[in-house]
Length: 322
Image (cartoon, rainbow, N blue to C red):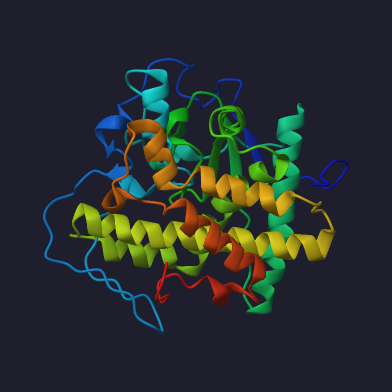
């Protein structure tokens, strides 16, 4: 990816020095392993609801609110917990005002932050133009860099959560050490694999602006764990598709993609599929517990966005096949 020397976003909040981090590295804040079991959202009660998909809109009946509104870009908790031993950390509720970013400009002081800022700037331009095509305004999100632990409007989280988007404060949270995990332990190498991760989280913000988050949250209320997981998979695969659409638009608009970049993103999608992560962490696969989709599904929907004509190509809720 050609990213050096290009415009960087001002919407970066760097909390890695400790301000707002909620503590240093080490012990967890609440035991995410007790909330997520093998990649499955914790049951929120029994349900008589059903999950359906139909053409022409979101066909969802029944729901569970997903972990105080936090949307994980990558469900790494089981894998990281097993790899690190013991409690992988997690999140607990925090006051809404705690998620606000500090006022004032941010200074980009390392290469990783520069890369993140350039990719975020590309997403801003692409989604501003895409929303304008539909006579809508795009509200840019803030991306928060943290080290070890962070406090958001959705709660406290540790690095074991993986990158995530919080709809309550419209901010993306990223522990940049995750990039090392992505490359060294998950085998997803290359700068465009990293760009894909950022684009996926920005896609959750796009979904939030389009009302997808609110509608699927209503659809989760009262659903069983398996039904809530099925809804989550549709949300996550749509985000993968929107990330693919961003890649297409970025290639056309900036000419920033290089040979092999799309392959890097596709490999990353394969390495972070629920089935791949479950095989790594527990040695077997439990499809009903999937919350993000299989490797094949994540690759398929990223490719659908990359080849698609627009946002309409990413309607996972009406698709006959995920």
